[in-house]
Length: 245
Image: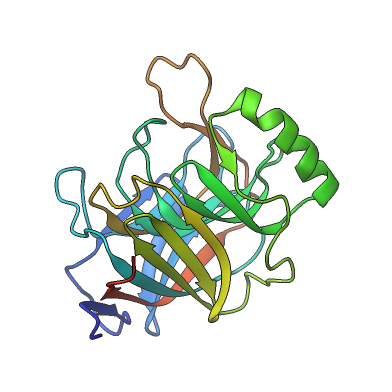
């Protein structure tokens, strides 16, 4: 099926919304979009992001396959990711379908690279010993309204500094996730196809945490210090309509 979006960053395009906050930057160089964060102070949110929609203008409806060719330039404290998002940080409303990288200086149970569907996480690569991760899982339900789909990473040897092709196959009951053609996660959710979404790629100096009793009911930024600049580089983005159910 023919792609309805293909962006290889050969030339500037008005399709994308570019954003940067504080100690961050973006550029298009040699047909690659470079989103960079840092060096960053811990008390300031620093973010570089590209997307193709706002709250009231989310262009994509179920169902579709989205492909990204991405690499990161090094270890990074904060988050990074690429996929689809309904543009809400409210805990009960937010429903991303994406790959997400998370690393923190302090105690944080989700330190690794995951496939995420709504509030469900499937580990692909962990940045801490599996035993510590499993211990964190026993405490996580009491600390945060998230669910863990597996206790075993599906591709622990993945080197995020190398170019890889990531694919999200989004359907009405969930999503399948692939890296270089290998399926690394499958998750189901009855509400996966109910909302419109936008394409989103970002790197920032924050991990997200839902504090119980929070007056806004949102995932709060827990900002991290980075002593060096780190980038998420995007070679292409491709979206293809899908009939897969």
